[in-house]
Image 1 (cartoon, helix red, strand yellow):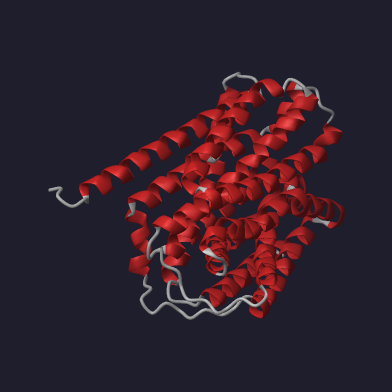
Image 2: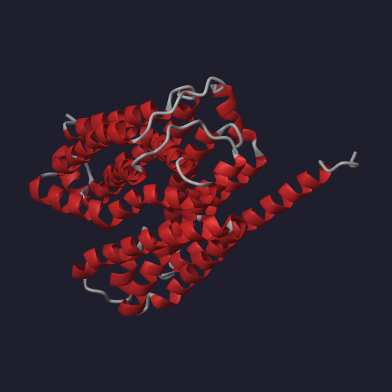
Length: 400
């Protein structure tokens, strides 16, 4: 693994806080629209389902921006790149609040999504470079804590403010968080010199590295189970378990707590033994998502398993750390693509779950979809390990 040189970090926790704040802003901006769909539709005079185009546009921005920015900005110093990404994110969200029409709003959500993957990827590299090698995953998890806290606190608060004062307030607030993040990164994150050997061609080399592709496959498929369950968790608990709709905020809180715990525990497991942590977490995901199918018949058990499904977030820091190990000299590209893959998992899980429910299966069958995706992630991990060992064997001395 190669890492760019970085100046000594005299205030590492402040640097991590600045990076995590950016994650909090990004997470809030991504999820807050889910609770403001009706307000956006009414104000911009479109049918409620059409607001889904804005959500998809943001996700498309993440997928496009991650590789594009990583390649084009390969030679930029990482601190400068992080600040630039936060400024673009701020502009996209503030402009979204002032969009003159729905078409402009959709385009501006795409703009806001462009920095998402690259920011998390570069932030993870900066945090990992500032700690001993056996603490990298925990450093990454502290940065990702901003994202999980956004699920628990940021999105619900933004939804409340948006419904009370207008949806524009939520996006403008996210833009303000991004501007504050840019300032704090400038103040607290140490400068690092640009890598003179970096180039778009070298970063794009990540796309042909076998171990990188297998890891991204786990992220894009194995991680999809969490989103399969979460995307339909409210109708599952209200329609099948008989939960009162007034408990909706509690469901989000329970899920958010689960993501935070999963993020922290997964990071510690990764620092101890990364190659055991990944399949272990996937197996855990398979079990808890599969059992959700039964648990969702009861409100109490359903709520418990919503939190347990949230712990699937443990895959985040483990896969991010794995990419650092296998990306070689294409660190920025690989790290950024991880978050593009997570967005792909979001789309895949929600789509498969929706198809399953439309076929007439119970709402809780989303848990079986999740378990299947986790099982597929285990298969991808096993195939990747087999391919890696086979390649190592072929490269051993004496082999022809």
